[in-house]
Length: 259
Ligand code: PLP
Image (cartoon, helix red, strand yellow):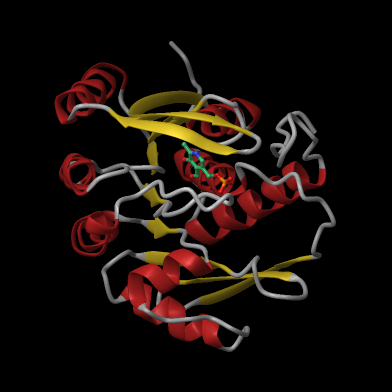
């Protein structure tokens, strides 16, 4: 019998291997866990962007989830690209029935500007998915899309966090990486506040950063860490992975998991 912590990603495939379930599974391997995947969509993707995307049928998503949960079990779940309102609702319904901690990365748009979630799915993310989250990990664009709060400085991060928490996740990690200066994130449950700072890294090869961070948080939670400890270790992991990001193809290369 394996003693490895069991971690599940519910996300889309990136054929280029930099983001999506490929980044998730690499993170899970690097962090000493057993990674499993429920595929929601397949993208034709490389370092230059997303050339095509296809959703899987709802029944296929449900069946993959049942196969994993009914036999193997999960100790933490992470969600990424969910593509449509129907898939968001299906995944939210499945996760409402689990006792495992759930990390929701409310993926909206890729770094290249390709939509990974339909605009018509935003409401289901707010009202169905965020309420089942142990931790939600939006970036500033996702915060703006979901809450209308535009973060322009560190002081706005608190307001953004409160607006996301109003939808019901237990904790929120607002990723302020797109602000100028140090990469500052705010983790809060509405009473405790943890400010996480890392020096800005001069590396454009950051494809897969968000997927990697959310997966690393899920790995920590599967190992029994508290949310603040899991997030702090995940931030350290992703900072190392960004520092080691490398060129691939003609565009933006991926973060590296072998550092
Ligand atoms: N492709 C897939 C399948 C993803 O899930 C994600 C992010 O979650 C991306 C692409 C975007 O990655 P990035 O914004 O790091 O380029």
